[in-house]
Amino acid sequence: MRQRTKINVDVSKPVRPFKRFWRGTGFSPAELLLEPEMRQMVAYLGGVPHEGVRYLRVHYLLNLLTASGGIENPRYDWSLLDRAVDVMVEHRLKPFFELMGNPSGIFTDYENIDQVKAWRDLVTAVAERYAGRYGIEELRSWFFETTNEADSGWWTYGERGYTNYYDACVAGLDAVDRALPMGGPGTARTLSPIFRAIVAHCDKGVSCLTNDGPPRIDFISIHEKGVNGSIEDLTPNTKGIIDRTLLVVDYLRQHHPRLAELPIVNDECDPQLGWSDHHSWHGKAYYAAIIGKIIEQHERCIIAPKAADFTFLSNDHAFIGGWGQRTIFSYFGPRNFRRAQWEHKTDLRTLATDVDAAPPFEQIKKPGLTSLELLATLGDTLCEATANPKLDPDIDGLAILPTKLADGGASIALIHSVDAITQSGRTSVRLQIDGLEPGRHGVCLLRIDNEFTNPMEVWEAQRDESNPRGPWEPVGAPREPTADQFAELRRAQEPALLHPISIVDAREGRISLDLDVPLPSLTQILVVPDTGAAPSAPTGLTATRYRGLGERQQRMLFWAAGDARPGIFYDVLTSTDGKIFEEVNPVPLISTAYLHVSPQSGVRYAVRARDAFARESPLCIIADGAAGV
Image (tube, rainbow, N blue to C red):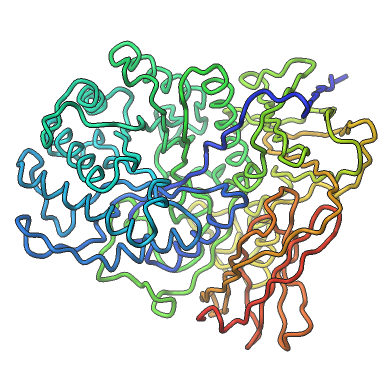
């Protein structure tokens, strides 16, 4: 008989603060921020609850500048870069600002001190401009970073040119505010020559611009992925990410102990190299579970033993692609973005920045994004957890992230993931949660697995016999689903409740749950106390117009949470008379973004919050026309 795993979580026994360190994503090139497809994606990213995605790391931002006047007296047109940064900030995202790009190609030699000074002045102008637009306190919450992966072959200015470039970045920021975080080198290869050169320079070198010692460096950034060496290899090596990160830490301690205590950042921590390489597991529950697995590994193997001050983890998966690409959305439409993203550039003259100028499109959230929605509900305090038999995530794949919520409840992630797509199975778990305040609690179980929250499985089951099989497509799966089929996919993309929310009385501060946990899966257990009060109303509701396939009108609704507690769900409602509102979302929402398809003319929108006890907030209402659409 299969042994049941017994897990006990005690929220009255805190272990340490829990930093939600994984809240970032990225893509290339920056021009895509001006396109409707990416703007819609950014709304979804900014809508992940509790700032579950906070930072957006975009390659080649400075390519959005055009320069005139030459290197001696450059004058910059900021219009496109302003619009791109506005897209992020307006959707509650913060740039992880790579100082990367070459406005109109005017920079050619970073060993030329005049060009180095010109780069310094450009960095100063960037910081001054956005401090003026958003305030210096906002800029202090951003990260500034070196150009991306200078060890990948594209950097042709040599190691001396690279250290000069870095000196200019630091001097440019320091001219505005020395509290603006600056780091790097964001290298692709473990301990590559560029990596060694920059840390040596920041430890014992001399700035070419100030001549007063080494430039500051506020964090060390690397790119370690779960690569096994071949795009045909379907099995990532997530433990290798940890091992190579610790190699970097050991190198710093041995050769540059002054830098060894700096925060460590892995801002391309993906389970696979090559965002465009096709593996079907990218669209399925395996990807969601492995994202959770990588986060848990960093917490258990680096942060908990204090092996390093690991501060930030980001995936690089906000590219535009299909089910099988390393992306968190699946794109349906006539445009081919692969070449632009692969070559990291787009012809600015061909940008279709206006909704009516761009072809219609549809996008479906994949489980990779939904995993970030679930993990965003974790609390800020890790609490004690014991298991019998003892959990061994590196062997059997079952891991737990147990957290206490600010109101005394619990948010617990059960992650079942192994580095092999061919393995499956189920584990029986008895979960006991102790240390709760006596009284009523709502219990919400949210699940991503092969059955729940898996729109690709739904798509594969859909049929369109009139379409021949396309590349990487199962027989019959529609290249362009019908309106009803897209509605079915969007129902499946939202976090699924495993069971209806249950109300239990924790008379002794204890709740027990029996769970059947499949492999792969991510299960989020929310236990929220009854405060007796209805949730506060959402605020700031806006609507942005898009065109879907078949010229279907769409509105992206985006709002701010009025109540920050986990266990809050949202309903989107419409009205044609401003008096009677009807709910239009077919399943509960935990994010603050929703795409409404085919609205009636003159419709008014509203959104409300609902807690686990079915109490509703007042409506937050907006007229469709008030959003400028």
